[in-house]
Image (cartoon, rainbow, N blue to C red; front, side):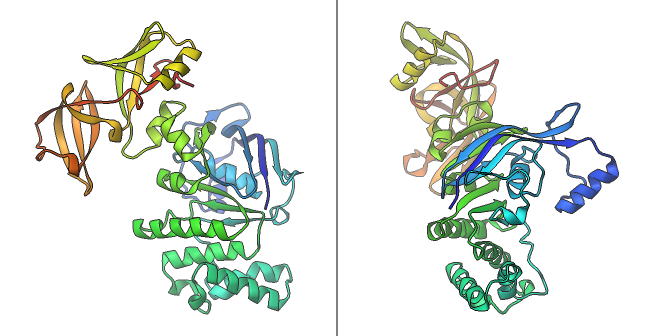
Length: 394
């Protein structure tokens, strides 16, 4: 329904007294003890978001992901108009929105804590915004019942929120948003209050929902599983800055830096101190006595950037780390049976390393203290600069 452009967006919180900070947190529903961490402090105040540039296509599903305090919710609230923009331009459908009131932006927002009116029925909650717009009763009824059918909550329309489960309440909150037929749907960690089973179910519901409504989605989460399964593209943030933008597959296969490599993927990527060796147009990674040639695509990118031999941080994902009869020696610390695979936690090269072994490939059980060897392929090795922490291929 709409394109969204964020051009060099910036958010600075001016210095404030303890009472002012408490009042701001209370108005936003944040716990008083919650603090922003690792953010830049300038003469203007605390910089929460810096140099944020993003073009969102019509009907695209964009996910902002990152650790707590990285600025993702602040960015979403600036799009919603709930936070003032300190610098830059927000453009929705070609119109500058910096000073446009939230109610006039044609957006809808789904909050983490549902924000339902407890004294109203599900029907009344969903119809409330339409009544404020003075829509005809028959139009309101049609939109509410269509949304309820999409979300499978028709049978709950006469109930009050307290009679619903967490998943049902979240469906109502989403329904209240989609009845408005907004150009942009904003979702701020909508599944974080649900248990693991319900989160999985609601993720599937959101995927189905986006196929049925013509809306652009901007979704905020700290859960990388949600980001990887929901997003057309993922925006990974840290300390107010964008670290990488790409499809789930791009950020998984080609992390831009050490932070992205460690943040995306579960279990987390294994890291080692290693050497990158250039021999004419060939590149090798040396770890312990194991020397592995990188694949031609990686070599071509390194050649294009004229990368030379150097000490590097080597990254290999647990699923790409394989047991071998010869290779890098390791000692088993913990063996976790995960059903279709076993997660072996081993000590190697002074590091804790995780190796994922499919159960169908296992030869016997691994006990604490067992000696094993592992290796990796040149197509799955990631090399990062020790100085800049950037991926040397990019």
